Length: 501
Image (cartoon, rainbow, N blue to C red; front, side, top):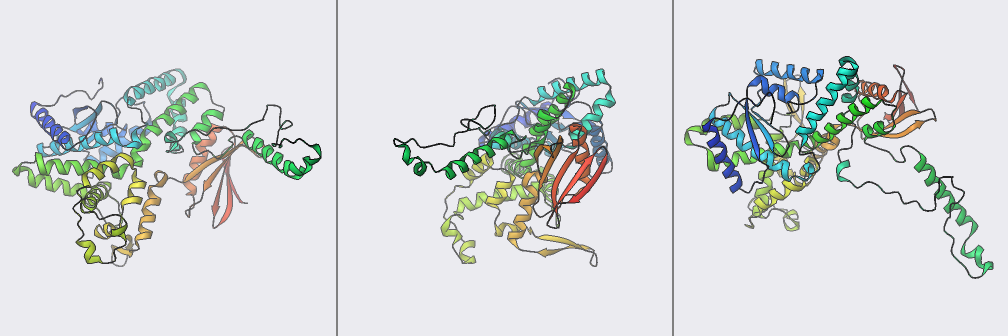
């Protein structure tokens, strides 16, 4: 790798540690890409974090702002990044020079857990494993644009693109494109539509075999289908960036810039879809490797202290490391003891359930299966149990100003699980679809917000509409619901308006 950060090789001591931990990881059955470790200081790792782990990424003020926030957090002692690893083949991992020996051992074990997850989890299977090269190409393109057109112009357009980078369909890479299956349609219109008459030998039977009313109904359905397919898009489309690329009046350089933002958004999407699982899996294995293989007696206190700090969880907050590692452990324990299936679920005795042990020993196999097929939504939906929620105190909390502390306001497991799934679904973003690229036959864009009990944040909605409007170059409308009534927001020529429908 050729970069500004490839400036420090591992010491001979760390090479020995790396090789030792790699061997332990392989003994446990982990399967990972080759990992290239590089040493960096706190300024370099903050810069890498701001760039999403890619030192070759294109320049933009937002990355500089992220770096400034990370640097202040480090300076004030609010946060510290111990490592960073990226999903490529080979994978690159960055280690902090200031980490002590036990931290380096823990981090290296953690990295191998991450890379095993990158390689084997289904939701990463469609990602670009050569993203480092792709990012470098993107950077060259953006810098060339800036040289030709001016930095302010290009960066201003990228501002709008990055403001809507979440308007993609995270599940699109895993779905088959819809196939049109319209027969007997021609480019001239609907005159030659054949509603499907039955062949007859005797003409006088035609009115009975092919009733005129039935044929007219069938022809009308086919005409509606033709009109639907002439509409752009023919069906609601969740990947708004793709729609803009295909239909917005963009210059070539603008298409390239928007395409770059979209490509990178899809690359990073699986990381957001599997945050709990990914961190939980890596934490599970660094804990397993350290406590059973790599940890020396003299390192026990340091490891326990730092591991406990990583796993700490405050009331009302979700720590993906803690939830992830504990849920993997819970699954392993349940499948080892046979605490699943119809017989277990129908057992009403809490005492019997607490002592349940079929000694199946299927736990390790099961967690590898879960690691392979799940994302955070299916992970929580399928394996989060009421007993688990009770043990980790996954309740709904609210801050009591009178007592000046967080207090439990709801212990209902079903509501707690629904709330957690709601936060994870669609990466925590509202469901927005483009439904019409020629709204009211005026060339305006119509978007639809799928209301799921939570109103749009109008402040963020306006900024999003403004950015879409700058790309679409015509008015943008969003249909939503407020207090159970349909409402239309419109952005046109720098002005916002709203009305109930």
